[in-house]
Length: 175
Image 1 (cartoon, rainbow, N blue to C red):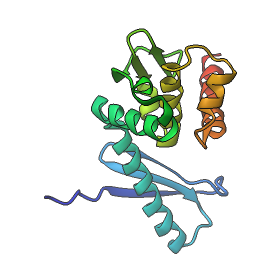
Image 2 (cartoon, rainbow, N blue to C red):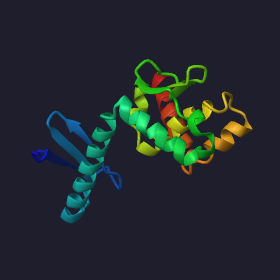
Image 3 (cartoon, rainbow, N blue to C red):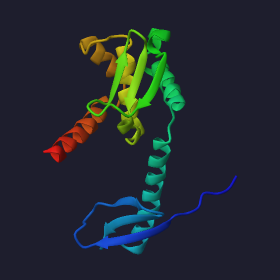
Image 4 (spheres, rainbow, N blue to C red):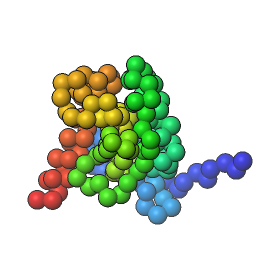
C-alpha cells in the first residue's frame, strides 16, 4: 500500500490574527493561516493539527450511502435498542436536493435522506441529524416523546446549536 503524499504547506502569518488558526486547500497546496506572534514550535504544532483536520474532513466527505446505512444501524442499536427493527430504516442515503433541511424521513416506506451539506460537518453533528431521522421512524411528529428519544444522544444541544449557527450564517449571507 502506497503512503499518502504529504501536501505542500504554505504558512501565512497575519498581524490581525490573535488566536485563531484556519486552513484550506488551494489547488495542490494547503494554506495555513496563523497569528504572526506564534513561535516556530507553535506553527509546527498547528500545521500538524490543521493537516489532520483537513484529512478528517476529506474522510467525512467520502462517506458513502453504505457507510451511512452502517452508521444508522449503530446509532439505532446504541440509542434506541428497545425498538429493534422498527428503528432501522429500509434505506438511508445522501441527497443533493435538500437545501432547506438537514434530513428527512418517510416513515411509511422507512426511508431516510440526509442532505449532502451534512456530509461536510463534524461526525457528531451528522450522528445527531441521523438519529433525529431514525426517531421519526418511531414517532413521526415532533412531540415530547420524540424529543425525549432524540435527547438520548449526549450531544443533542451542541449539535442543534451548531446547525442553528450554520442556518443563521446562510440566512445572513442571503440577505
